[in-house]
Length: 300
Ligand code: NDP
Image (cartoon, rainbow, N blue to C red; front, side, top):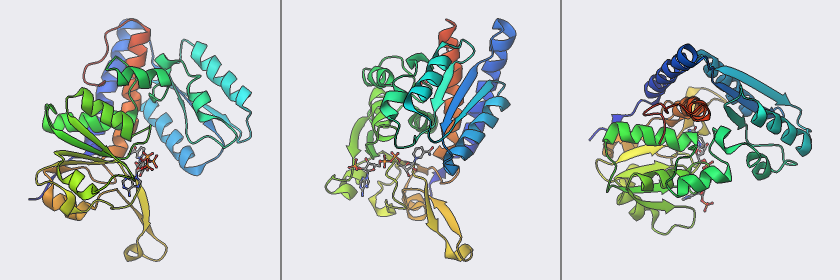
């Protein structure tokens, strides 16, 4: 079997188009422009790239983008004051504090200071609780994007066996919760899981979010299973030239694609969906803040 490739780049472009349509309606019918504020503390190069690309795409779909760049030695009090100001600003519907924060800042404290209604990353403890109890919440972007791709490819997920590799707060746990809310039978595997290969072989859906390059080989995959590879790992690629690197996922794409029914590539799978879902969450937050109907298909 050769797996169908789930094209995250094309899917994300479709989601962004849908977002842009809703933004136009919000502007034309209601005179509201959704706004997303991104707070970056310090000069981590990867974070700078993410923030630039988030700002660019926010503007491309017609929303307002507000960037707050703070020095690496910003005090917790000053950062909390910035978040407080954004919480109170009616032009700002979504707030994202780019992680990781410098070590002297308490990430949990900062994230939990964001108004949960504006917490478009879905990391605030209130949103975690709402998701966990199956209530309307802001849903973390990477798991939301993964869920959208699964629903699009499989239709109903009800009754399917899903295995989530990884139990982080930003990917593994919310992903498992979303699959459970869609009536999958969910197993969460982690570094202490015994007989991981056997656990994965039972899965109709495998979501890999481990951070270990090409860890899952094809002979762990049940024939026909759908594989969502969240991992983004940079490895040496001497075949491309001296000192060159390439991005790979947490699954061994070549061997898994031989067995799976469908698979997301890396790059071009889950990655592009994450920013698209951030924009979707901002439109959702804007609609909720203004008592308007939420866009269909852009939330969990
Ligand atoms: P974390 O490091 O926070 O979590 C990794 C998880 O994998 C942990 O739960 C850990 O288990 C588990 N794990 C580690 N080694 C093994 C192993 N040998 N067998 C089974 N489980 C193992 O990572 P994140 O969740 O933040 O990210 C995971 C991956 O997803 C990374 O590659 C990251 O770059 C990528 N990512 C991609 C995004 C995107 O937009 N596409 C967004 C966010 C992340 P334990 O808890 O026991 O330590």
